Image 1 (tube, rainbow, N blue to C red):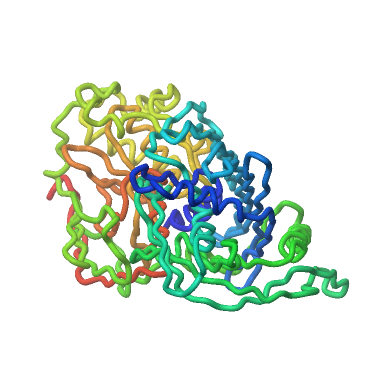
Image 2 (image 1 turned 90 degrees about the vertical axis):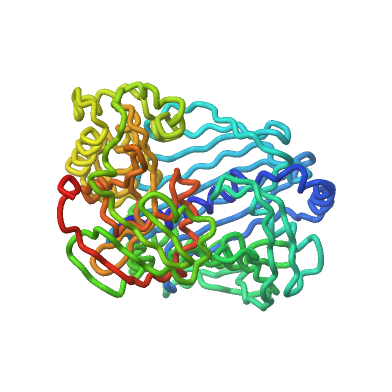
Length: 529
């Protein structure tokens, strides 16, 4: 019942101002000079936005571009209160990015904070061949990471600038930009399309209404804007929105029902500050619309027992980029069949060793540490040993880890990016925290493990959810949040991997439909089947 897709979308708002897009060198030839020329037309300016959900103000945002003789400075920030399972959570994201006069990334500093301590990402470009960065969380020791790139660097937030300043904006115009997509961690060429043109009434000044106790619009301007979107199916609005002739955002709709609207500073920020004061200082307000409720997908059927087999039809989304086919899942056209692992699928075929043994080379990426996943840390190694003991069978060891995490971690929704050591200390969280802690423990015990994410069935609906997969001779789904070993078939896996892959779930929110075609309940335990 996680809101990973929604949180990923909010985090990407900050990342859009930070990590940027890394272009392929062979595709980018001839465009470096054009972007440098376009940069001469960029004006220093700052815009403010009110963040709404269901017509209710839940936050504010701002975006500014300043110029110096040698650089552009791009600053973005956003704060929003979101309701998850009836509880209010505040998300704050801020980024500071320095670009060269040719729009090439120089360095960046991005911070995202919510329920957990802030996550900070600091980095710099190394010419046009690499980006070096560090990720600092509440419990991790930051170590530099180096990402090789092929070509100059372009920021996603500057894609609208390149489209609108590169020619007269008009409906139907297309512009192809080679870029690195931070949601998939892969270089690709993206086509932006101008889909529509419209006039917007935007407030540019405000006055204080003493009777209402808030700022109201004093003067409005009419702004002509164009709706940009990706030309790829299922990705129509992820990088777009309504932008003016200078490529600056006027209005944008985000997954989870969030809407950003340009407005005067006082209406955006001062009203936000006043609302915080009424709500009790720094305490977040409680929006009426719940993220879980607005992003859940109806199943059309109800059942009480876990499922051994599930067959569903997926509607309204392009399926090509997702990890739908393989292992327990089989995709045929738009029909997905999931079969829960049997006893024969739980025979690992290897003996567990804390150091990974012969598996270390083959499963380096799913046995080793990652930013915010501190596999091999002494605390995780010792905790895993205390849970597993001397057990060498990976199947038995995995089941012990699943049940320990399920019993030990309190079920509480947390908005933020979890790290394994923090969850080990706090022992609280939702599916993301359960998954991250399990991955840290399993890898520290020498069991290859990776994250999976998608939809899971609960009480007649499919909710966005995350769970682990472990290598037991094949990738086997387990769920420490629900205490399932193996996980039942009502887990629809769309991605495997970390946050960058899980961000793809943003494409599903508000669009995907799921029709249940077949549902077979679990008749017995895996060991007896």
